[in-house]
Image (cartoon, rainbow, N blue to C red; front, side, top):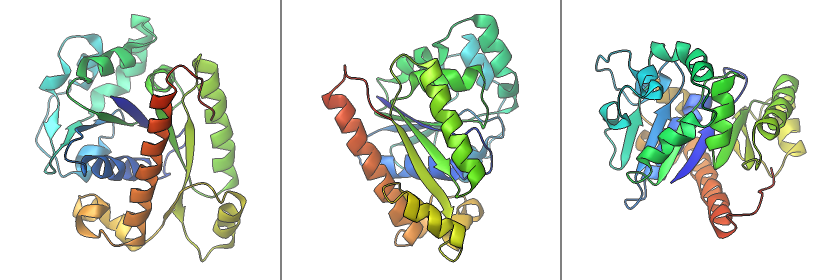
Length: 253
């Protein structure tokens, strides 16, 4: 099972939108089971998939070892795609992880479900703490959304530094330009400066994901953003194939 973390130290960068749409892209392959694990207490992933059933505050209990993962996993309305939702109890998760003193607790939990899924996508909270460090240790690939701004570029450098500080063999880091508006000079400059980076356009269809409460490919598959998400996922799969072919080599960022 490959672990794809969608992470940013900065909020408001389109992280949950990217995570949910990538999970849908992954599940398009009928032979591939995909789990989207929401680690953000705001529980945005469940909202995006219209999962409104009342749940107890148990997400933290999974990390404490009080309940198994399968008791919290919910099927989505799309074949091959399940969700492990978040709840407000995750606000206390960092303190729990520090108390447990288990630096690979998240990776251990991921191992427990790897027989059931081929792809695990983590929607991470915008924080730099023990949880983010554990995400970096568990991830096969880290996707970093970057709206085109000087602050985002600075945040990306910080994420790269943190990943290298917390891992002996850093996973590949894939920056993604998010919320691109080609009518704005700053955005065009960001595209020109980073031509190899994937870019997700800021179009009305992307905003409709939260209104429709469905991934973009489910209601606007021919939109430029849906095509961009599909291309991004294809790039992730190519990177995962490279990792699988060279499992003992340190991967470049």
